[in-house]
Length: 231
Image (cartoon, rainbow, N blue to C red; front, side, top):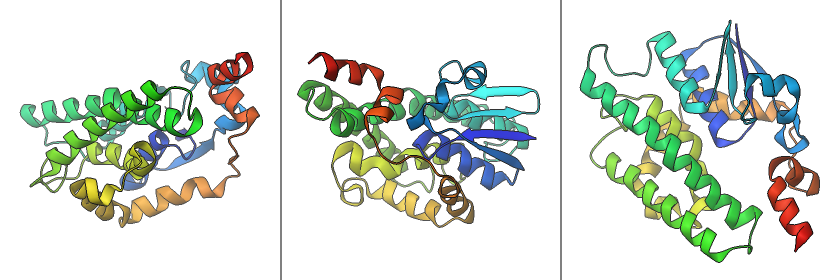
């Protein structure tokens, strides 16, 4: 049995979509990071990075959303290039790590300095928005003339993009429909999939804390709390 540790953040949502697309049975385990549930000894033993998502698949424990996507794809044989197609697998791995090392970190930091730590550093905000925009433009260009990121077949790369793309307006303070029409077209298609509808519904079944108050900042951004206290 799969146990899926999640909340409504972009990275867990990618995995929620994959689980719903594959039809694998799983048990959702909510982790409310705004009240510090990611810092319990039990969760730390599962994921020493203390971030969601994490997943236990029988006796296999995995953390990092992109690693989980690849594990589930290989487990089921779904949403991957055809077996033996080395060139396509090279593209899959390249884009998967591009999202892991670029889209996610730069987008997350752009949101942090634009909304959570607003006004603290103009340079930091400009830097992360510039890099986030540059990475999203690479995705936009990749989708030109293609149905999906790898061509004609829907894959875990599109799911990884789907997790973050709804945040583009908050990331870049821009209208994604105007700036990134290819991404918008892809997201419109994916959002209509029954699996995506079920994935988006999953967090609504649990009472996750919504307020980004002092307690939430202490659990999620302790350095920001310390900065404010010392300023």
